[in-house]
Picture 1 (cartoon, rainbow, N blue to C red):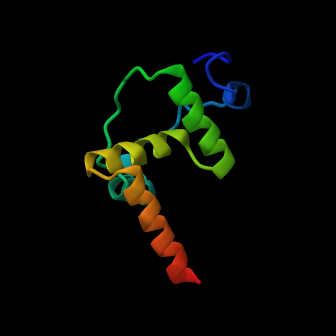
Picture 2: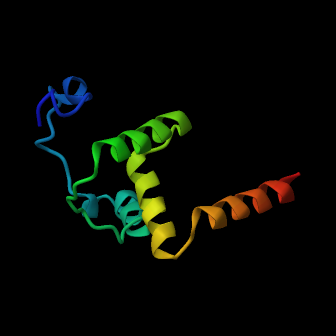
Picture 3: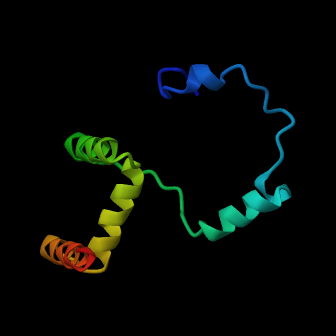
Length: 97
């Protein structure tokens, strides 16, 4: 890792992780990982403009662009259209009032 690839590099560069334990040896972390498991690390190429859109939306919402992309892929895989998502959002908002 270099400071060119990660903006937090300088903050953690001097930390010593030589005594770090694996997650499996820390029960609360192991439980958290099990609850949020089921994900796979992949590498894929995405058009720069699409990535910029997701990063901008994540920044505006205070979220994570990868989570937004995962949600969009899930909606597509479930066959949801933009119209379906808008309808559901409106229904939720109307029931909150």
